[in-house]
Image 1 (cartoon, one colour):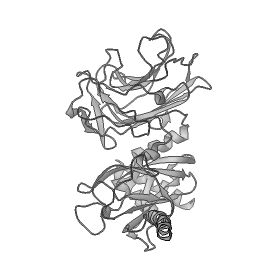
Image 2 (cartoon, rainbow, N blue to C red):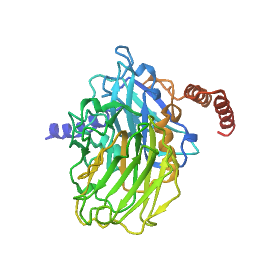
Image 3 (tube, rainbow, N blue to C red):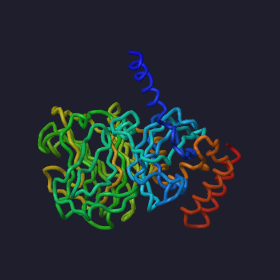
Image 4 (tube, helix red, strand yellow):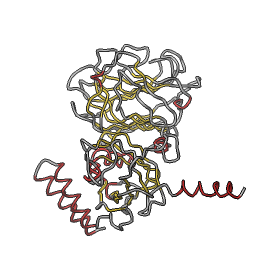
Length: 421
């Protein structure tokens, strides 16, 4: 019995010491407070290759991460005691690209927040998606999340949440409909192949309350109206279908939110907005519904673009399940001619500050997060000094802008920030 008792005591100790023991390299990642419009908790942080040291990539070398990112981990402290969940969507060492999401407990609009990345450990893989630090833990506050990284003709479009509301090809999606997106890849709905991706009916998608829909879309320069998100009940013509439709008028580059609460279009609230989207470019949108006030706001590039519009009736969806479709309205001939990327749905109300912060992060990750100097684990280095962060940030901003006037604005803003930190 003593030997058995010894084994049961030892195993938990081994599991606890698995991380960060054996990891070779670590680096501090500083979330810049002046990019955060308001304090947030459970913030999903987007990181790309611009946020990691170049040594973490490469086909060979002493310090790189594994191809696929199986050994990449994150913590809130330099010792690795407090680990946090992450999703490694892609990690391409050969081409030095990645798409990573990390659930950060809190971010501040007044104080820079530092987290730590860990890498360079042989024979590691990411935890199971439903494990404590697995990818589904990142999206705990979301009803559905789609990165649009899959070939829509050959594989389901994964919902990264634990709800598993994957989208399947219900029409004529083709291999060529997987295109380069704003973040990684995107889905092309070209309007002539009966293109539609649709989820199964599921109770997790039934929502009569607050809602925030967000994502990136790219309209063509000319064409007819395009539907790029529809959440609805069973059957388009049922009295209680409760449809939420977000569509665009490509000819005017405006958008329309339809809030149906009756039989198809008999009872609905329509709101065309002065969206002024940019044709043939990626536009970041948000739709926020507040059922306590029966109001909806629409945002472009993190800024509200229309005065709040009101509706008089809430949905009365009697069915126990609902579903999502993209590219075409179910049981309707309307088809889309646009591209979608990073579509997210949650059943709460994002504030204007929340939305502005999300836009800052997804649109310019290089200025949202500044990496420090990588070091050996236990080496005591890693975090950049404040002067180094400002210098790196200015250089990255200069690389993103186009004219002398904007360059002067960046320099002035940097000087102002350095005297107020």
